[in-house]
Image 1 (cartoon, rainbow, N blue to C red):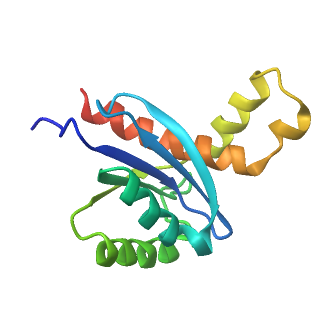
Image 2 (tube, rainbow, N blue to C red; image 1 turned 120 degrees about the horizontal axis):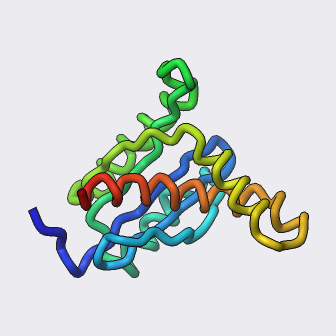
Length: 143
């Protein structure tokens, strides 16, 4: 099945306080870190974003532990997914294992020659993690 060339995908790294958001290009090949928003404002942010961009899919990280057990935040994510389904019934939702995304994001930032303050900014880590979640989905779907 071919992707719609006029739509984009969003990646979400859901957190209790802050949530990282990423977005794809129209070809669904590249993931770009987009924004980090207060989780309490996440649904409103997505409503505004879907007015600006035609979003076909939302890819949300699934917080698995190393032993494959689900992290406690999963219940909150499931409730959030119900809200998305209600607000955006035409947008498909997929889940992706998000283990190690924060750790990889920190490594990426540490490799960049930036000021320590920027490297330690958790909002940057959140949106890079969202980009890694979306990227892992894009890689799987283009094989």
